[in-house]
Image 1 (tube, helix red, strand yellow):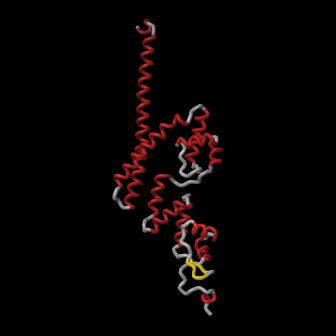
Image 2: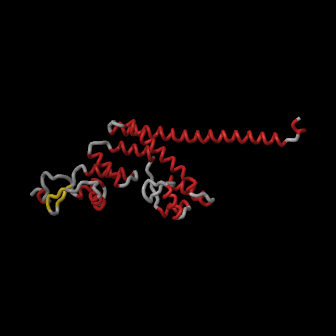
Image 3: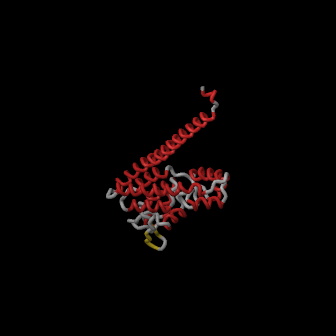
Amino acid sequence: MALRAIRNEPADKPGLRMNELMAATGLPRSTLAHYVKEGLLLPPVKTSVNMAYYAPESVERVRFIQAMKARHLPLGKIKTLLALRDKGLDPWLVVELNQVIFGPSEATMDRAEFVRETGLTDDQLASLLEAGLLLPLEPDRFDRQDAALGAFYAQALAQGVSPGDFSFYVRYARLIVAEEMQFRRRITAGLSFEREAEITSQLVRSVRALRGYILDRCFQREVAARQERRLRELVEEDGETKPDSDRE
């Protein structure tokens, strides 16, 4: 009797059994079952009560999931990327674009760890979040950039500065971003998915440099003008107070 008959497997089995999928991906049953539950993997096809097969492409799909998890992407985001892939679009374009926008993915800390590291109190953290002065990319998950700014806020608050003193940054940043998004929509309207991703990536790099350049130069020119005015005032004050004998 053939081995296949002994195992009661059909000659044209529709995919991989769980043990085979585990061996091909190196993942435990519990992880693979979780991916199925979350909609990242298609449910297995059942051929009998005790026999189920996963689609052969599940192996490559799991590899993609693991590659995205290595970049610290949440499962919800990975599910969206898989949906793009299922429609024949290249999800790596989005991954590369996100790297340009957000930078390399990194581990994050929870709220308790963030408070310990920055020196902020829970109430101060809540106030900064409500004011939009701390903008974590995930709810209650903070990265190193959040932590650096949190430490700055802790020092400023200790010196009597209030969150409201920084509110103009949030107000004008939202206006700038809204204008930038309208600009992007205008120049990418009607483009293919691939071309839109390419143009958006170029825009992010250029506009980030432009934004920093204009803000810095406006600041530098304002400081230079104020310094010049102040120096002239000091010279004039000094001239007015000198004795007549010193001027001869």
